[in-house]
Image (cartoon, rainbow, N blue to C red; front, side, top):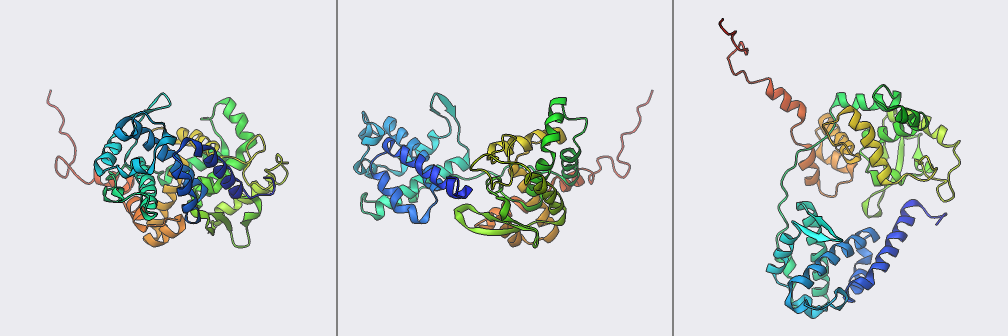
Length: 359
């Protein structure tokens, strides 16, 4: 796969993983995945397969028609007997279930994704007249409860970048030694996350030739395979230029020669390594917040919305298909507003202070 792009190689790996899973699934699933190939990515189909396997396991222990069967023995006739109540029971089952010897718990978002996977399968089987109805379409998606939005404040962004740039006393001796080798890479990577709102999966897929300093932009592959150009500010351009000068002196491992961001093993960085990198620095700056690459993306989105007030622009830059997703996340009150509210109410009138105790 040396001559393939990162994204093409990833699609091939995901297609291979799906092919390996097919014997574990009912035979009609192979037809389903072939049928939805033109409109889905290999990763989407792989995630569908993983979700559906959980549903089929549930059926074996719940539905009488599937008792004593294995998952590959489930038929379309069995699927035709599924009711709305069965699916609602399945969603409740996902609240706490055991898989691979581990107790798992799905939140509303995970339940919604698994229901969407089941809906896609039943919709396909109904369309192909393999089942008489699609009862999943009648089941409402789980209601999502608003979560507290975690992001960095302006002063925390500055502290984070200073720490990555300069190291400092907060790093352990081992971290400080490692920091000397990775300072430019780490600064360029975190600056890119904060300065463009790029997804971590898009970031690790960047190649050296994707960056064009004549327009201060880089080419990324969005979800679904769409190729778009993201632009970065001059502050990001400065650190990125410095890092790329260093990167060009590093001889990468075969198959990773084009990767923009390399690990210390001289291989393309993966999502997990970027997550660990962000966690390492952010936990030293703001230990009470669980900061991930996605939270840096949220920080960018919040700042862009605060500066422009244009929710459609924010949605476009972040690559959101639905502007309501953007509005839900970035039009909320900020921590700064809540802190201002805390100082606006005086419990003891204009004085606002507790009277001294008498002796």
